[in-house]
Amino acid sequence: MSAADLNQDSFILAAGDPYLSALIGTIEEPGGSTNATQAGRLTLAWWDRHGTGPSCAELIDAVFSSPNWDDIIEDPDRTLLERREQTDLLHRWLISYWSRLGAIAYIPGHDDVVRPGRIHGRTCVNC
Image (tube, helix red, strand yellow):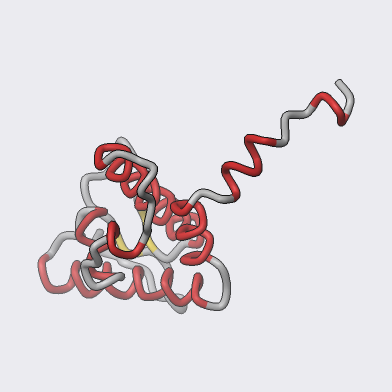
């Protein structure tokens, strides 16, 4: 396969996607590590307060102060159902990213709640 055979239109469409732009804007530095650290601290505080961790949706709402994603991400070309699916995908990517950074601990398909990760050398010993 030569470089001329590559279909570059799909990359152009993906790069112009408002949900992808929102994800990149949320995880890019310097704010990306700040959001991750905040997610870790909120999870630890939630665990200390309730004896269990938040759900992924509860953590996302806590980190971003329960935003209306439809107001933040304008995408009139998608149906309401498609926008909900894209928002859910955005949330799953954020949880995955924060987990990879070690700010939280969450295994999709296994965990019901988010556990604290490593924050400044502190780990959750009772989780």
